[in-house]
Length: 312
Ligand SMILES: Cc1cc2nc3c(=O)[nH]c(=O)nc-3n(C[C@H](O)[C@H](O)[C@H](O)COP(=O)(O)OP(=O)(O)OC[C@H]3O[C@@H](n4cnc5c(N)ncnc54)[C@H](O)[C@@H]3O)c2cc1C
Image (cartoon, rainbow, N blue to C red; front, side, top):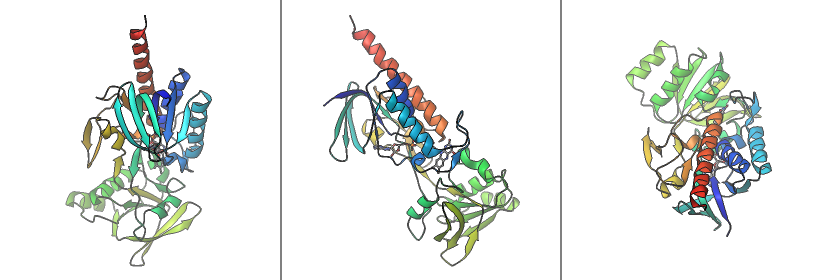
């Protein structure tokens, strides 16, 4: 079995940016990706990626992969289910029994976002998420709802949805909140919503109304139809930390889920770095690319130091 200097788990913007730096420095690097990252499905334009105005997620994803491969990185499809070992000798295993050996590891596995359920099923949202007017990330997409009639879909905590709506109300004054799960709104949030004229509706979604990626309305279980120009989802996110935890990476509790503690990308486990959305801060493409790059620089420097120390 051949051994890689670095194995990167996750081929989103963080993992591929890390691969670009390492491959550029002639490191033998492997990226293993199961292709579920948001950019694989994001057809809407991204307006906040520096140097790449109004690029589509899918195009960006493709360009990063091409650049990494052209520089010599191997990028393969796979689902890593276990990671063990220590610096110099890590063993990763895939769901089909594949095995990969690496000296160092960069985890760029991203986060899992919860979609609202539609008649009990989250999959109908795939037709709209990242396609046009169904948004998830205020840091990335809030300006897209400027002056638009907007519904915040609360599919987690009621106060979380209210907080999102209040924050987004600086972009539009036509705002409603739909609470589909928890209806347990604190008095403070209820008053804040009321003072801004934000109406609260309660109900489960039965149907999504729309076509070609553009959502025009929500049909609720009781038959009510709510139409709007834009929809913002407020839902819990969970870091994909399973491999980090198997390797012993120290976790911090962020809200109601665990995330690796490291802000910089180096971890308490020698030979293991993290990057992108997996890190305990906001989720953005440019942050993912930057943190992938920083982690890769640290990895390359670590490998170089080891080479200097072991050379005669
Ligand atoms: C709908 C939507 C719209 C967005 N719009 C914007 C925007 O306009 N601007 C912006 O800056 N950001 C936007 N974002 C956020 C942006 O997409 C993320 O911040 C970015 O993709 C994070 O990059 P990443 O590489 O850390 O993780 P990801 O892109 O999530 O990539 C992680 C990859 O790791 C893979 N993976 C995970 N676990 C394993 C495993 N065990 N084995 C193998 N592979 C694994 C996944 O399949 C995935 O492909 C948006 C997000 C969403 C959901």
